[in-house]
Image (cartoon, rainbow, N blue to C red; front, side, top):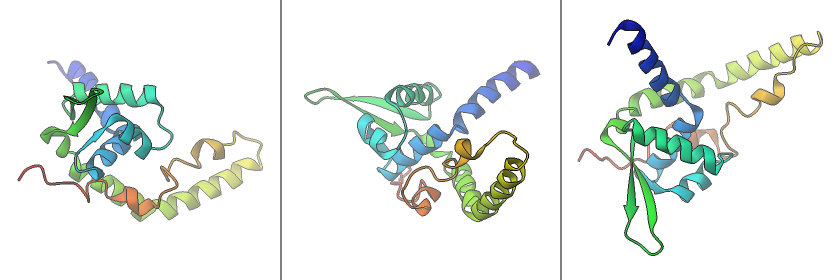
Length: 156
């Protein structure tokens, strides 16, 4: 694979792994012991539509981050589980969540300064776009900071 092709492939994978829904979905799966049903994930991740969840789960499955298992129940159910490859994201995600915890107040202060400065100039109002970005739900931030903390160790 030449350099440009490799860059395109890695960019696509990075876009998915760094996607906010991917991180929140994997966190929900891990808080549920590493596996969970579709509607349980949807309830856990607020603001996520059925279409977006389906699309994200399919991309995660295609990339080997999760696996989909059909349950032999009536009615038939589907369960999603984090794969060993998916578990390798633990350290980078914990580092990212740690950074958010460490710098959240500083980022919020910077946003306030920016919004104040540009609101007086009649510039674009970014406040509506960004007020929810750092706090994924009404749940305490600490619940989201260590998505793998309650995870069942799958390597044992």
